Image (tube, rainbow, N blue to C red; front, side, top):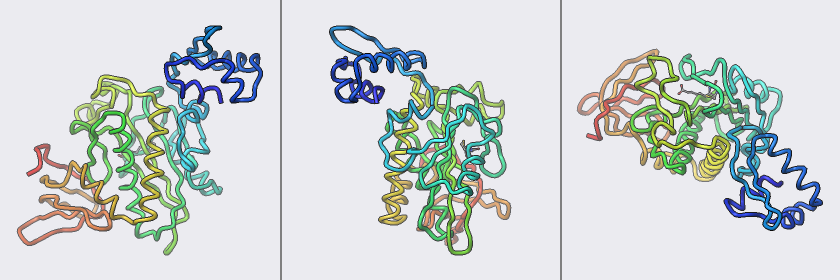
Length: 323
Ligand code: BTN
């Protein structure tokens, strides 16, 4: 595909001959493709003695843009893209019920009713950020499903770090940049007693939005990569990198279990060692977050000699450095 060849060529010219040779197309057909890419917003320089050079990629998220970046075998090889959706998780869930395969992804430029954890909403304006849901069909017992969310958190953090953003993870799966939330994960499950039918991993990453676009109550706690780093992120490139990390971490998890995920999670945790207040439907407790156990539950020391195990909840944590 021409786009992939030109992307591989980075800022160098790729000769028309090389393009037509590799793709088995006539020079005229190559020119037609270039023209159609230009109509889609790609800026491609054409110099008769040198060939073609890609100058600018439009920041779109359609399968065409994404395929040029994809390095995965399964995740994102089938993409259901929509300009606008209520929620990518909703469509992914529906597609999975209808039989969609492991690795299929639903992706939207904007969401009109993006869902956050615990019934909250996820602000999802068009043109700036990433909203996707990955369908997984893991061979896991349902009791181990929470591990998947931590696998995803480690993978999203790895992608953010690849793009220069030193993300940390706040238990269980909020991604923070300089102490503010930059991404969130919402996992939804269809399972019976002893079998997971599928899991939908909903991932929202604030890439290029500005905190001023968030509702008042989120402005001091949310941020975006662009806001923190000062440079925009090409969404398709980020999505492809994130799925590659996800595929890699899922493979590791499948082969070696939760141990390596737990180690990676702990390494970049923003929570361990902090004073925390945990609120869930059932409990409220305060203490120091000491560790996560082999299932991903948070271990909180509430008093000398007493450690509580927390499997779900919201966390308020001290902003101070590790104690
Ligand atoms: C959180 O509350 O931290 C989880 C936020 C998850 C948001 C993502 S955006 C893509 C996917 N579709 C949704 O409706 N929600 C998730």
